Length: 259
Length: 375
Ligand SMILES: Cc1ncc(C[n+]2csc(CCOP(=O)(O)OP(=O)(O)O)c2C)c(N)n1
Ligand code: SF4
Image 1 (cartoon, rainbow over the protein chains, first blue to last red):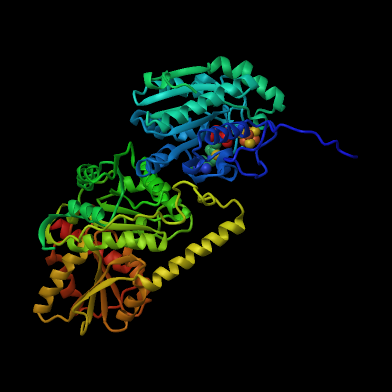
Image 2 (cartoon, helix red, strand yellow):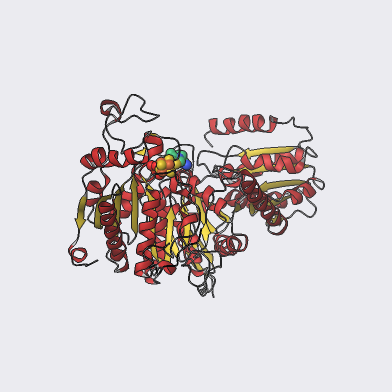
């Protein structure tokens, strides 16, 4: 077949902040979407060369394979403490953590809360997929009431194991937190909003305004037992109502930022 | 610089400052808190990072982060804190980044007490965290030694990209003693090439302890082990006192070793041919030197402020060549020189062989008698 030569405008390319590695994430997983958004923001802000990422323990443990900048890999839940150590001795660098809900809201609850309380000048990208992905689909602190997981086979019984935790709401109560927002990755319109939030969060750090966190409602089709499309619908229909989207804390200086 | 009267923990903290520590992260715990309090004033005054963390878990992960960023980093704690830190210690070892941890040991297990003890020997020397790794453990016995070895600890940590522990006990931490501090070192200007500091004009640096393919982890384990063998070859440190013509050798580390040295002096005045061997690196342990010692003496006495944790290492080095006896005070009790002197006198007269394990049974009998006498 002979291809016709046409003039094409390049409208989409790999951000410099991403490597060319083939993904290990499952089809329909939104980790990849979140990676791409972070990378685009780092590119647009021109901060790739000073960025230091802190990867969690979870499906995104190998985030450093995809990002084209310095990275460390933390112990389960401890990324905010590790990021604190880095940022305190290298305040000139841009330091961010990338964490799942088991990592951030369960085992690492202490570290994230105190990083927020201290107003640590780091950025946190928080992937809330309501499940433990990497270990095969156990109940997470964010698993919805009634939701079946391998460790709540009859559905999450709130009488026995309690209710899901709403991290954005909780962290917004910390005086040290400057920008706390929840967005979702379930459709293109929301992906655009999510990117804006990520951009703002990094701007907060670049201006030394303190702690910023972007919670992203995400899909785990594999462990939810849904197709990729069904999983996105599940986010829209089930997660968004329980975890309402929007800004939870925007201090005055941040409200003035235009991104 | 001249000698001055220095308080243990504060002097150790200042020694770390002068060795170029750029990040101190800690959590209050007696008997190590003065370290934290001193750093709270000193580090910010120098424009360096100080942070009281929300827990020892967070504190050591902050140290881990700062170490990955290529800065000299430190924490100081005591047993219960060290237990919480073991997760990060294993990660630090697995990531091969340098870090220094001071453990001012106290009585245990559990909450125990805040009195001086050496009960964390195994926890320090044998690792404490999960996986195959080998920390360097330095056990000074005087304020001066502690100052000197804190400086050395940072150098060794950097040289071998290793975890280095300084173990002292509450005695030394709280002691006022005349000592000399080293001059202030200049801070490192360039980060080590492996550190994370921003991938400008180079490929990204990645620091991780995950090697998902077993063959990769195996290669890593081999690298760690070979590095450790190198350390065993180069870095064994110890002190000997009056051992030239000794027939009885006392082996003891840290402050217990210091108590032993005064007992040995008195025994010498009584004409007993006794000397002291004091390991300074309890890891790497001076196996060869103690093996050689066991070929020259008739009997060995191990003295510790625990139930005989180093004893096992000494026995391994001695290999049954001569009887090894044990004496310890435990639970936060520091032995008096007189107690050790009694032991030296008794041992000097004794010709009995000791069946393996009986050294502890016999010690317990003597100890319980002593306790019953109210000593
Ligand atoms: C101390 C410790 N406990 C447990 C584990 C096992 N573990 C690995 S990942 C994970 C949960 C990850 O779930 P999440 O943070 O929600 O991330 P996801 O995989 O869903 O992206 C657990 C429990 C571990 N690695 N370390
Ligand atoms: S298990 Fe879930 S979170 Fe993990 S990669 Fe697959 S879809 Fe994504």
